[in-house]
Amino acid sequence: MYTKYDSLLELYAQYNVADCGTSSLIPTGGSMNLYKIYGLPNDYDNSTVVPLAFATWTQAILQNEIDDQTTYTNKDLETFANMAYYKSTQVGCAYQACPTSQPPAHAVACVFNSA
Image (cartoon, rainbow, N blue to C red; front, side, top):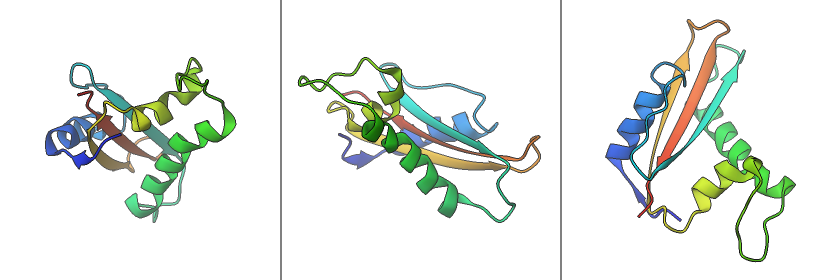
């Protein structure tokens, strides 16, 4: 599991949310969680949307099982696995509001390394 925030990974995350999540650029061997939500009130910002993203990424483990070897084969567990992977030692995240998109959207991305 990651232990250090990384500004380079944050730049990757910023790139991926700059157009509200239509890009997908990650470093070799890395992984990314991307959360997009549409139609929220205009006063919603990162203090609301980022916790929603993390709740969504972690809820998968509550609804799915992993085996005794702590491996997963269910694609629904990918976002949780990205966060919990023992070789992921660094993370960088970014948030972007996209009020001019139709419908208005918000995006959060976290990019993880794989040591």
